Image (cartoon, rainbow, N blue to C red; front, side, top):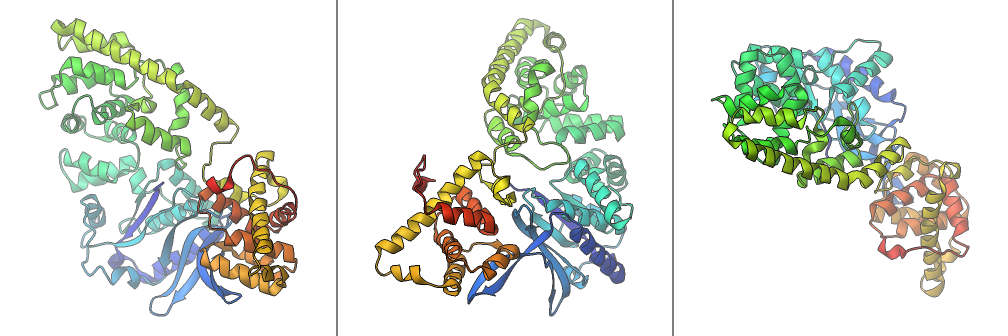
Amino acid sequence: MGVYLHLHIDPHHIDPSRWSTVYQQSLQLLKAFPSGPARLVYRTKHKAECCIMTRAVEDRKETEGRYWEVHGDMESKQLGEPFRLFENLDHYAKNRPKRLNRSGDLLRRLAEDDDTYHGTVFDAKTQGYPYCAPLLAVAVWVETCFPQHAHVSGDIDQGQCREAVAYIARHLGEDAELPLSVSPQRLLACMADLYQGTEVMDRFERIYRGSESDSLKALLAHGDPQVVRAWLCKSSKENTINTLGSITWSTACLNAGVDIDDLCHILLGDERGPGYDPVDLAGDLAATWVSIPISKREALDVLNKPEGRSDTIPSQFGGIFMDMGGLAGRRIKAYVPAEQIIETLCTYGPEKAAEIESRFYKRHERALEELKGLSGYLDKLNEMHDQGKLPDSDGEDFLAIKSMADLSEDQKAFLDVMAYNVQRWRRMMVDDERLSVLLDLQADDLRGMAAHLIERNRIVLTEDAWSWIDDEQDRDLLMAVGALSGSEQRGMLFWNLRWAVLESRELCEWVAKRSYEEIELPFDPEEE
């Protein structure tokens, strides 16, 4: 899942001393994060070079000075791409020799996809993981402090940014502004100062971070009505009728509050529009599911990304598989009775009334069948959503486990897989004379062996995990660490489950003891 966060600045027009202050404040925002921001570093452990998650996010480069780097957080242990912020403003200016001259030029360059003038601070994927929250707060604060010379963007929405503003107020005691990219009225005013005519709308859409429906709502609420109408006619011609693009465009208009009469006039009657055939449009409008009562569509809400949150597995399913199958109805929020739609369409082709009605109801009935076919899956997803148990196919939920008391019975069954791996490893050493000497290794040697296996298999552990491993004297536990670290299984479920066990001495001790008992697995672990 690619969830981006962007922060661009014009370093030539920012005061270096003020930037240094903001850098210090950004550290405050990071350190206030309850889950603890984490950085990946390489450190020597028992003569092996191991990758370690540490809370020490700040470092110094000889030529560029202080900076911080964050890859994830210590609690969830979910790792995304690295984000860095340098205290020395020259880091961002050195590769951008061109200077912007006027206020608003940064916004203009971004709207026109010209990256030759600005410095990039953030341009990476958080995957929507928890560490996205303090990073977004940092980005929002930078734009607040340098409103003409910094810009926040990415896969963000107004809800997330409101939370960032509240976070800043709690931890800095300062009032922050919502970013321009999620403030439609302010953004539209800026674009009107920079551009003219329908280009205002084109550039607004390029910068605004929100759904297509949200963008249209903003334009309808704050834009010049005549210019917006001309822009709607122009943009409607970008899609071929009876495609996902045309259906999605009509859905966005209906959700934004464009009534069915205006929508049909744009698509059928306005000479600036695409001039569709009303029979073809009948199929398109039925495919939006707008004529299905809202009460019958409520179960679809679980497939939509909740505002202020990152995508969930179900919303990803909704975005990929339903769209690929042409089931765009998950997006519709409006409702228009079928009779009203047909009546409106017939005014543009009264001689085709029978054909319009037939085409509409044929697609409408198909939509009802599509919805019915999803009912079992949607019921299960909604039940899991209500229970807070949405599926996690990668086993990342195991990474939050601290002790055996946190485990459900189903999760305990997965620990048998870990114990089985330790058991099999020990049996292999007993059966192979060359390896049997490993059974007699003392604690320090077992620890060194485990460290080299962790290095070889590129396993990441937190500094907390190393804290207990470094001090451990129980040979059985260290043998379990070595056995699990030596496994070359690559599935993410196994990888995350092993990580959870190695992080917790209590879980590792349970696995070590269980490995001496008879274990029957309901599946072949070699296939997992």
